[in-house]
Image (spheres, rainbow, N blue to C red):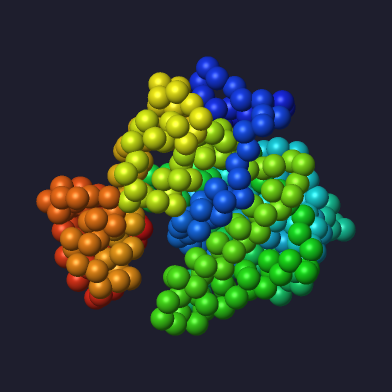
Length: 337
């Protein structure tokens, strides 16, 4: 998958470009389907407190990060780029494997680097703060994965940060603070609650993009080619339907060969391989949230043969469906649905 920032065009394949003014648009229904099926896995939450005259540097992490400035003014530099202003309620999504730095001016010369001794971990939250220092910048960061099934990551190919200015009325800060409180309390369902809160923020970003003249959604390869995304959204919404390459190409309004080429270029896999992944996700959800028989779970995932379903599920999750369900009840089934 390749995503490049192009001023007047959106990349949809190695040798094919779709103008941004194309009449082929991603519908609200398609976006609704995609957002509903989006899985969020919260890796970590961090609180950053930076007093005047200090700076903090972060190395790389192989997942994207949401950075929300609760209060204070300063500067942030992402991946060595020139610093840009930080102000309250500014939200930034930093791409995976991208270092960044936050600094606040002081009166005694250049900002001083906060040492590693000032990093603490408690109740699942990493905090960065100078002892006895009154913070100027107060920021909450969430590191996460956002995916459809096990192989399609929404932010996996993001190369440039997404920057949006929100307002207090948007209540992004309340959601992040609630997520931090969930981690500190460590009650039953903490993972589901923090994931839900972070997903609400992602949906807020998508809504903002839909209304904006600068649609950041077009930076993502899986959303930039609206014709292919239309077919992918149908797969996400109805994984158990009798999809074929021909029917998906028809949904995209493309010839079979053009659809195959563009889909494979964007997702790195064939349509049927991605469909199998989505069907396994649906099966895992059914196994952990319903009492359906294995045969019904198989049919709901698009398999008429129980044996072929069991083989596919075992390949995806390294265990039989019945074992997966039993382990889920015991709280042992691995995350990945």
